[in-house]
Length: 431
Image 1 (cartoon, rainbow, N blue to C red):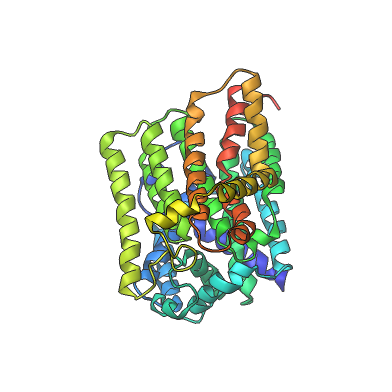
Image 2: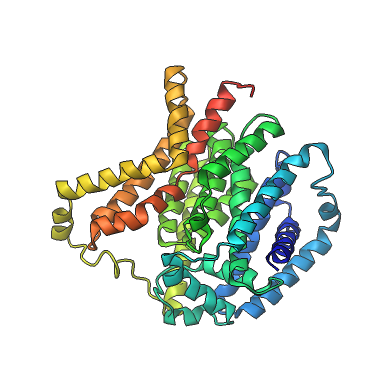
């Protein structure tokens, strides 16, 4: 039964996410690969599903509108859809290889159905809310109503349309997003498809753990940041101007981050500031981009207020943010504890270790590229945010660090792969 379900859902993912919008946004850049188009389609459809949920629609209505949208797009784009030929053209065996790895991970998830603590406590109840055709308004009765719900919504949607309605089937969409985001990072390499296949499997082996697919939303943050890393590498690392495709895709990613987890909003603004400070984007576009992200965040606040959902972020771990309390929390012992846990988390993160190895190689070869400054800026901002979240916490500091820091470091880790990619591309390594 599980194998049938997996084949069915993989077919659904590939067919659904291969259907393009009948608009020329992604056609304006002739350098886009099939994965690029797939990523754009995924982000469009995820944001459409999110938008429908904000209208207080039950899942059965969302599915009806979603299927109608796909049907209309398919009619308009029938010729292009028939030209995909994933497994026919000579160079697309890379995509076939991705599909094999995707299938194997889906099998592992299907036969390891344990949910982690966060999923059981926070995310599964929200998924169950949507699966039972309750609306966003009913989330006020779910645990932690201040938490965003995009990941739980996707979980419920694909659970609902699976061939056999087992809970784990909804989480298989996380596997699909994970593999596509890793493939997107892999395509930044300027090497043959055979080498990309090797690089892809190395990244999978370094990052895959079942616990990441057990319902926690940190994996979705990881996927969105992976896609962002490729976009910023193309814009900043390769000194290119921002295309309409990249502009729209960044907005869709930022909106998805805002609705995935609390820290997603912070990452969205870090991404935008990284773009503003290091890319060739003109002032009008930069102010438009920043203004739109602020507007998207404002929409989230408005929606939460409208449906009487909790918008407080300090009702759990940050109860006292008075000036005197903040000063008191910045003690040397607390700072030392946080730094110690940071070091151990770095040592447990394979992407960090791989990036550090290639950074040292760059230093030894005296080829430190100034274009990499955006990577360091992204991590300085990210880790300052994470450090601040822990130092200001009123809960048991060691418990919070033990249960959350590794996942936060993992979420932001895709940018380390850009150091590896830059080293290989600039040294013209022939592997």
